[in-house]
Length: 144
Image 1 (cartoon, helix red, strand yellow):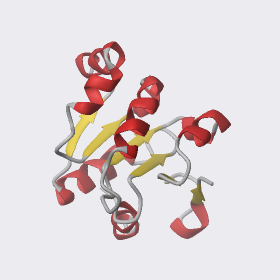
Image 2 (tube, one colour; image 1 turned 180 degrees about the vertical axis):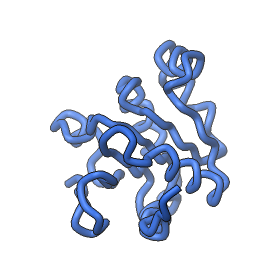
Image 3 (tube, one colour; image 1 turned 90 degrees about the vertical axis):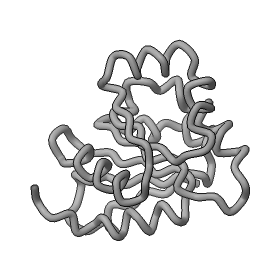
Image 4 (cartoon, one colour; image 1 turned 135 degrees about the vertical axis):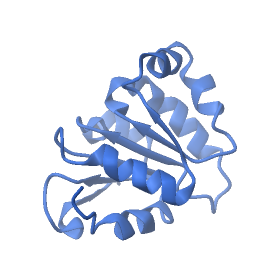
């Protein structure tokens, strides 16, 4: 495994935002990075690559997200279940004002670049593309 020099930067972002979306091309190391962060922060890790997890997410998006009420969670391969977006928004909106780092989402498709999604989640999320640049600061795209 290559060293992940950006891990401290991403951990810091999780202290500032409720939702962090890690995107990039296939095989860029998103899953490896997300698992390491989940282990360090004590977050529950789930992959939407798992058919059972994906079925649960799609069948009842709000119930699925509500099942993580007491914990922070990593949802890997989030692009497979974009219908979770509104459930995540509702969960994020209901968090105490100081609570950050609730969701770490990963995906190879930047579903958060759409105007509709940005409108649904203004100011609550931060996106980082791990495949665009070796410098994390040059790859930041904050929603407005």
